[in-house]
Image 1 (cartoon, rainbow, N blue to C red):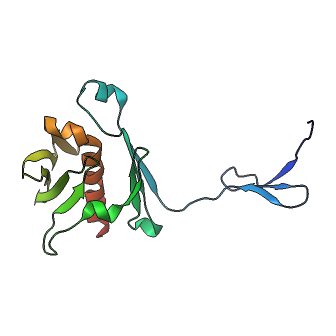
Image 2: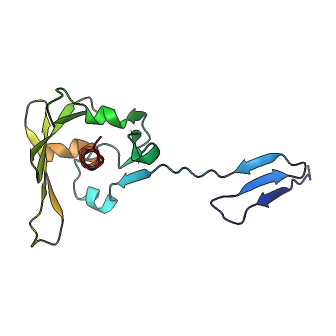
Image 3: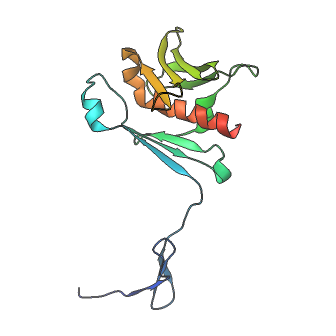
Length: 170
């Protein structure tokens, strides 16, 4: 079959263009989503230094309008509500709970204004995040115990999500 199909492009901007056939029917269009999408990517070179790392190498945070809570995805897994990774068990508590893909529950707790700890269901600290002193080049330090490597992407993702929730008063 030697048929050809012609599509006309409308719009010069590659972020805002559409294609129509010669009869005026829309064939394709690009739609911009004003909502923020963040991708967390685990660097392969770093991961290769730690053979016990498990879980997905990426996570995706899809925010709602005006940076409202949306949903997140680990690797190619199912979507889940961001709020589900920021669960509170008591209204008066600043601790936030999340369930890792392996089914284990963890909690981020604020130890001070400058320090957060991630603890497992046995109350063992698996990771700490602490703002650095002004003399240091980096902003903060993340310390992971070996056991945290099995869920490191989820730990970093939920740390970031907790910091965003604090900044945006969710």
